[in-house]
Image 1 (cartoon, rainbow, N blue to C red):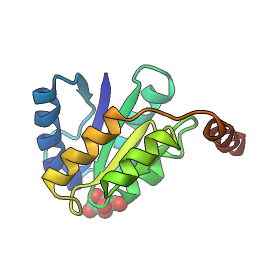
Image 2 (image 1 turned 180 degrees about the vertical axis):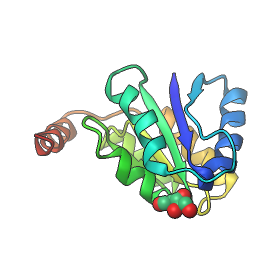
Image 3 (image 1 turned 120 degrees about the horizontal axis):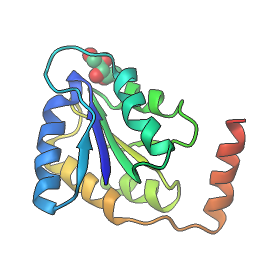
Length: 144
Ligand code: RB5
């Protein structure tokens, strides 16, 4: 189960991605925002990231205008590794090397079809473990 959320800047792309997930048969929960009215992206980041950090959802997708603000905010939650991806290679590597548990996208930056490829890649790839796990452990040591 995927947790998904966006601010107003990512609202339109989120609607397209949810339809894409429906077509793929991927289950998700939408944590808002539910209209194009202006909201604050840290509130949406918190709503999605906290249940992921608590183990209620395996992965998430967060979208704001650039993907920058919402990724910065999500990464403040302990246990979250949110990766802003604007290309397919980064989506692949953020899973293989960083075990990213949230994919961030920029709704005003990344076109719909590229976003679908990035989402598909993010969902398909797995963590490579081994030396990368040691590095993840060091990231979490920084949270202490
Ligand atoms: C909202 O206008 C915009 O600042 C937000 O969506 C995001 O791009 C912030 O990083």
